[in-house]
Image 1 (cartoon, rainbow, N blue to C red):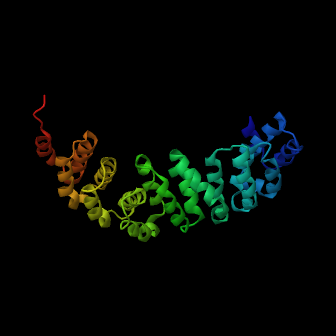
Image 2: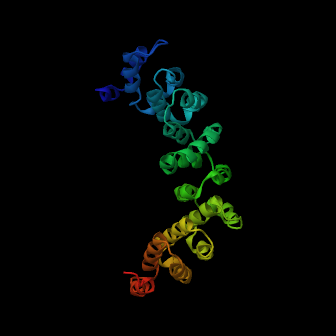
Image 3: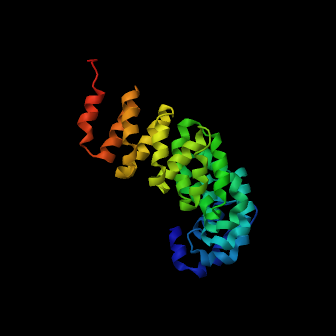
Length: 277
């Protein structure tokens, strides 16, 4: 039934806002706010101050309405940051608003980076796109924060950095000269998405030195490249022969099949043959 108000359009906005008056949340206020959040942003834009007032009372629907309004709602950002902290609105809601207002969301960058590292599930689809929308300059701050990651979480973030596209290549390439660690690994895997041809030699070298969890990530990245990664075949065969890890062996076999074709598989099976029953 709430969608019916949106179909009525502009004549329904005033009466619904009237139901949102007051300093205490009521069921009528909550339903009216939910109905308003279904309207087009251009009808809601003249009422930014009203939705800012509603943030402590009906935070979810007020945020949704402000997000629909877009850049004109930028003055609401400090209030949404406060609502995210006090009223525990989801971090994805803050990210959606930041995405809607773009560069004006600069003050939200520190909190978005915190959320990026806390919530791996929304990192790619919410917090990452919001940071990119704010500007490519946020890459350095995101990249610096990656040193807080442990090896188990490294694989969640290359696609986030990949959202920055070719603008990220110089920064990521420079990181390949860093000591082994989360940042270098993420940079290596992100370059596999953005500039695969250039990064294959670096991946082949890393296969010979990195720990097994990182080897698996590199092998999976090479597999996704397909024949583009042919230069890495000797290193893949070497790690396959040397490793005792089932996960590394499986990833290596899959990578060889995608890169060099199924003709590699019989030879690989023979290489993996063991005298154990």
